[in-house]
Amino acid sequence: MELTVVHDGKEWIAFDQDKEFRGTSLEEMDDQIRDYVLKSGRVGKGQRLKVWMYFNTAVIPEWMRQYMQHYFNRVLIIEN
Image 1 (cartoon, one colour):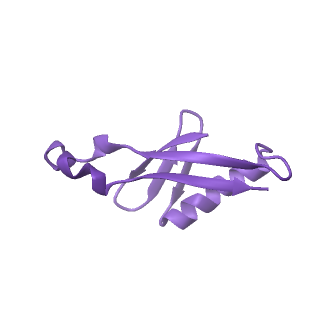
Image 2 (cartoon, rainbow, N blue to C red):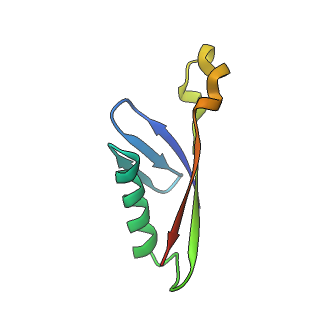
């Protein structure tokens, strides 16, 4: 599962073309993703799923992109 991550100044937002997850903290957003994955049955008993999250660097002003290595991509591992 792959999601794009942005921050709108108030919340972290992870999304793809079908879903959107929001949280005032990364932990809150991760909890929403975890709940969705487990309730949707995407992870069977004894299995794990990696959720790849890529920060959308387009939200960073162009003059700051030289510092992009300070922004991040994440992997959330969900086990059932």
